Length: 412
Ligand code: AMP
Ligand code: MG
Image: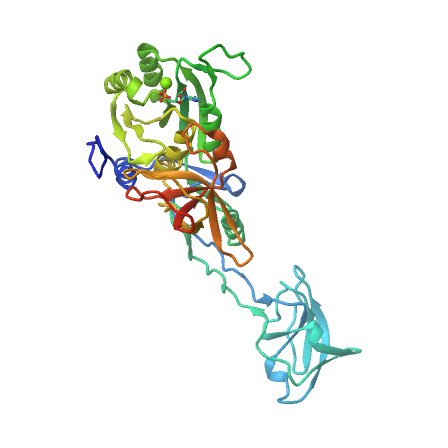
């Protein structure tokens, strides 16, 4: 993997966000191992094979209404018709007979139609006189019948491999006779924090120490049914320990994510260790927050070395790591949708990097979207990110944003 320059800033060439995403997509290959799971375990998993309907949906002609089923042929033109009510078809308890001329039956939603009935009228539109049902002159014919296979036909392709299974898909599978599916196996992911200053929760802080927030942030970001995730703990700023830990992890996991230690200060030793362990490149991405990022492979394991600042972790995860994990999971490519909104606060922006500023998006009564800054934009400012519900994405070549300018946002 070679570093390519896309956006030139004062000092060094940076890799554009799009180029970084593309390079990662090119070198990651989807998992090929699969497992068969029952529907209840299939939500959010990725289909490994194409799935076809096993039966017609509906499997039989049935009523879309509570009402009366009849033969259209029996209705008189332009005047009321009386038909004799000869039985009932319930959902689950069909009427086992045929209609003779001049007959109809009571029918409920989802109940099977007699073979020769071709229409249902809503119960509100008829009148009842003993066993006679009076159909008005306005009664419409050939209505309210759900035809065999009108939703899905037996043998139809329901979904192609790569589909992430949704709740509605589970319903469709069940209805069309698919009771288990082949999905990609779980992705095995381990993450670590790096830094001598990091202290586990509940311990009192000495001067210079901070609580390790990134592992909590990452455990939230990685909470996904497609992943088996292990919190690997903190690695101190120590070459030997870092090397040993990464090499061991690479044997057992598909993906290692670390935070911290990728910036200029520590890059030298991290670079040295990662060069020794595998094929890892240090990128400077034209993205703010999140400029330094290490990406590559340690043996067969993909490695993402994210920046240390929590907001940079969140942004690089969303923009770089998530699409990469999707690809590795075998999921179809999902574009990150940008929505246009009017910016109601001025934003500071230096030309050169794509900014992911934290914003609060809202909608007025007429549906117009506007966005304001969520507060301080430092890559360490968790409180503003916590208030935010979107990123305001400002392109690399954009300068300061004035009030009422249109901007792009990505929902969080
Ligand atoms: P580094 O990339 O290691 O130089 O870290 C950049 C900044 O992020 C420093 O202020 C670190 O203290 C901070 N940082 C690194 N790791 C963590 C973490 N796990 N939790 C909170 N802050 C961190
Ligand atoms: Mg550090």
